[in-house]
Length: 493
Image (cartoon, rainbow, N blue to C red; front, side):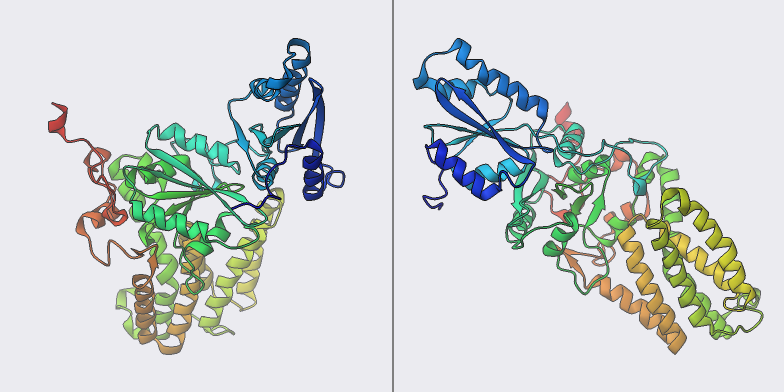
């Protein structure tokens, strides 16, 4: 319960003193207030420049000023002012804490002398960019809009695709100081209620001053994966992908200031699917999916396998005897692989931090000059550059950036294990890789489902891009309340 000090007072002077002390009015230039005398009583308007829409605020001020020209009944001042707050969303708050939180979220706070509550008017206008196609989830055919850093716009983009009265956006504020808006999104009659409640409980238990890194900070409270490199939630910036997962029974988490939406729960196989597969006919989508699977496997296994054949050529059939360096270099093969792999990572990091106009030229210089010179001086063999490049392309073919980095870490350990122990090192390493994923759980969901535990029907949907009319049931792993995606044909007759 709030103390008497937190309750809004009917005295406008006490309200001013409290707001000035808490908000630093007169010190912070962006927090200000305007006083208008209406029917011989003061009405204070508090706002934050940069978060409030100036045109809306001015329009409201005009309407309130006009009260002096058309009204005389001072006893009904509160009702008259409330009616002049021309906005679709007006609320009343009884405590200073609630009023200040709304004010710092960009809303207009109105105090009336003699009234012990504050009116909250939604005049938010957050700075930001418009919806545009995400760089990491581009498709040849399909929508070109994407989520932005504005949670209000993101709810609109989702609602546009899911016009269901059961769609819910539950708002929770996280962070003692940041008070970041977090929305739990689900379809009420599809999503598992226990899953929704689990996620809400975890979010409400977050005890921290602020989540400056938005969704990523919140993720670490939800799944607690300090010892695992594998992503336990899926991120997307595409509203159509988010809507598709809502229809399956997943729960989304939107965090204000982040253009990414978290999809929960997810498995390993959620991270290797892409929207492009569903923008093509099923046969083409299946082909694209299998090519992507091949790229992901090559990103993990190509370098360790090649190293094994180089170190133990007796495992090679005669037809593949050409594999392996023709001459011994100055640096051991295993060290060459690790150095070249780390070099690719250096280039990727450098490209991120390099201005766009320069990054293309830098990539060409690195690929042509550095690689060629490294071969000439004997640091790398030509085959090292070839296989490391193919492995890197396989990493970039992985739809989930987080999963590609996790696989890269595992690949380095597989290379080291193979270099030290040969075939047993590679077999043990791959076994540990699979066991690690089998033992991983994301929000009570087996990470390697539907392979382990095996579900043949779901596995068919993983391996093949099934036509939409044939997708009659939702994934059982999310425990949907309504398992049928299409109405029974008998009920239509």
